[in-house]
Image (cartoon, rainbow, N blue to C red):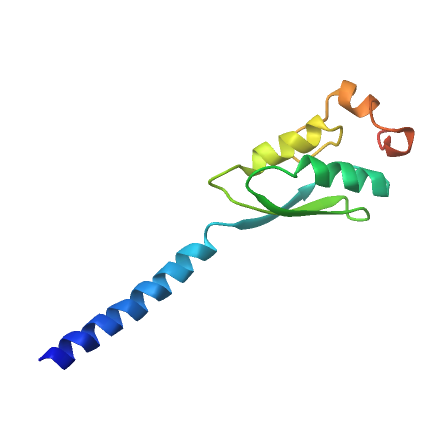
Length: 113
């Protein structure tokens, strides 16, 4: 009787641990979005805009003009991350950078024609 009880507890522990690991994977999300720019400094600027609580990493690809970001949806949203990038002067899928932020970028970063 006691052996069956312990076996039941062990099985429950394995199931609970497996479920917990699956839930942990849901705490972060990886997404990419367009972020306009034209030089390595743009990449530094875009990535620094995303150096906020809830973001695990952000990498900007100069040639694709896309940023890939891994973040915690409980801490921030994709829209908020795009807003932060636009506020630094770089157009995104969801937001155009304000002219004041765009014009404040160094000349090498002016990607608009």
